[in-house]
Length: 148
Image 1 (cartoon, rainbow, N blue to C red):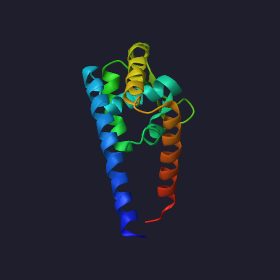
Image 2 (image 1 turned 30 degrees about the vertical axis):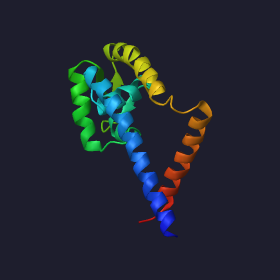
Image 3 (image 1 turned 90 degrees about the vertical axis):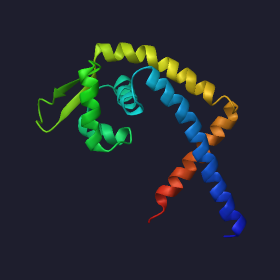
């Protein structure tokens, strides 16, 4: 590896980080204005689109430590957005399910979030978005293959 290749890798990291930060700042502001944090939104979005989920599986599906899930679920349950249901066949499993109030909230919020993400990524053409998706997937998978 040459010095130029190393500098290019560093530049890629910086550009990716800045793009991620720019998008996150706008989306976090959107969530704040709608009185949810990004993690609460991620849990609601999962339940809204995928239906009832075991609490034990939510963390891995939204990339969150399992210890934090209970706290987030408690907050969403207190707000009436989700309910917990015990599994009738296995006492160790508890399901989280979006409530009617949570579904109504997401039915109003999610389309606005989608539209905002579309606007935020409109600096790229549809073909460039496809290319970026493929390249970033390739990068992510190659990192997983490295063993540290």
